[in-house]
Length: 308
Image (tube, rainbow, N blue to C red; front, side, top):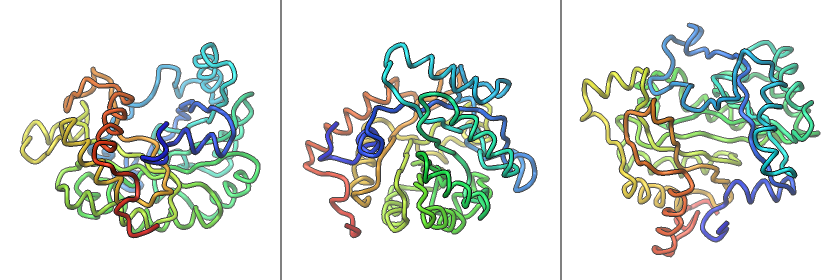
């Protein structure tokens, strides 16, 4: 790792837990308030959950079984590895607190699991849940990862996100105030957002008590509303090529607070689901190109950030 360029997730985890860690994705059978009518129907226009559920991740199986199968998948190569149970599919705080507690504790009961990552929406947490997670975080690693996606309310409306940025800001602050680690997920290149709008994000996010940030490029995925929009009006979308996206991410990282952990820069959806852009590149290959570009420019995370 080149810690002089940016603060990466493996370095953060090694400092925090003192060991190598792998996430094990879990599908606990949740839905989403933006699908079942509580907030909206149809879900976010970009969303197809099949793009990130690994083969061992099946909601028909108990959480413990999914985690155990994930551990077996990785353990033969890395016997000393520890694991984080990653509640990833859909909205993983959307349910009765008693059920949530049972599912989280079930995952933590698997040998080798040293913590939880809970992916959710900023409009799906309440005081009771945060109180429980605060207590849980005092005995194990807990990270709540919010899908924020954009800081622009017009964009959030356009992609049928079903919440505002103000709700994201409140959820992040309320979570961090309890001492719980907070992550955010952002999509770069959503329709209607040019480079100037995207590069407004780092200052806004840096002012929040975020621990971890995940970025990825906009991808057009089959069986989504956005795929239909793209087919009917492709000129409404700017899909970055690799070089453009590297330059964009460099500018983004330069503006970020230097202590925010950067976990991810790109997403690689399954070939059978991906419409565009098809970079034919693994995540680690992109990261190496990004680092090379940052070295060439003599830049680093936070170089242009007003928040030091």
